[in-house]
Image 1 (spheres, one colour):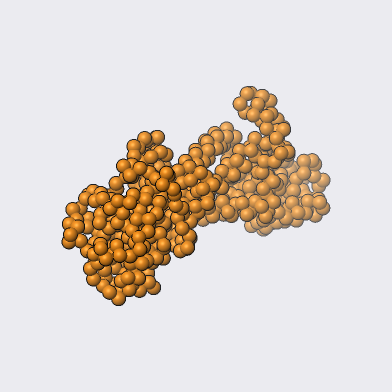
Image 2 (cartoon, each protein chain N blue to C red):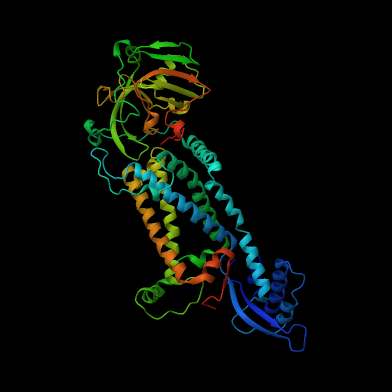
Length: 287
Length: 237
């Protein structure tokens, strides 16, 4: 601020110097720096000097400038163990909030040609616990509850009466790897329509045969590429990939796409966000 | 605005007939407060972004296929921040906002204050690059200094600040490959965006390495100038 004045008034040397000197001593908080004023009257030799000040004033000026940086120490709170967790949680929460704002219902995830598909054998199998929780297919139902008109058990055959959609989309893991797979199933939005879900509710939560659990924001649940997936590469879903029914959501990272679904709830309140989210992963993680 | 010059004087025998005033040093106001705040904010956030980024990288230290996976680099955990992937993501997704905000404020300040002239490498600086390189690396004579930054310095700073932009854009392409699918596409797809993000980090680290060496070589007054703004006894007029 101060040096700005100095530069601006440079043309008129004598008055500029006087002003600068005044400003300097005012900034330094000294009553009167007589020395400066005394010298200002003299002719300044080259090089151009905006003002002359005593060593004491210079030290004080420097200290002042240094003190202006002290608010940066507040960032040190991140290093204090008792603050760290809650600060990082807030930071992650802000990122999730921003992610939800960035999500566009009508924006489709890129799709790929069949030749771009990762071979099925190279599609990684990722489970948090077991590769196969041993679901007995004959007894399997999807139990729907919460803000729906028709709660109850839905068989796979019932879900398969809904229009089938197939899409070649990218599956991105939180770890950083990605594969392009071919997924088939019913749109979750169609299923929510079938069960008479209140789509003004905020979340869908799901529970799985392997005790995994997840939650999904309604906007993503209604996205046209969000599938109740029962096919991969045009074949029935294998046990390792989540048979008989899994979520496939190309607008979300992998861990949101729960396998071996058993229960679904439409709700405004989420008690447990998700298995990984409860360990510290992002709740929204939209791609 | 930077550039104000002062003379630091000492008065002896004050109040007597023998009163004498002598100049003991010169000082130049090189770094406005906004620049200093941004510099240190950036130093902190860059440190966290690199540390947590390397921990994130540890989760899949490769740029190829998942099956079979060929690890590129097994970065030691002790040189990373966050402890595990989830922890590192928390750091990364928190400090990225500080990193981005700092960059935006810095660029806006430089542009509107006109202070960018001090840093920005322009074609005018090209002829001065070679003499500086000769001086630093081949024991050539030191070219006379005319302003706060020599042409090589301007080149380094302009490049480093310039790298901030792709560091954010490649990060966005990895974080939101669907919402910013066009960005990922520009970078050659998700795979390449991830690789670019990694490479941009190393380019920035290369700058930081050189920068730290130069800071050590140029001594205390130079270092203090980034704290107080004032550089005592600069090597230019």
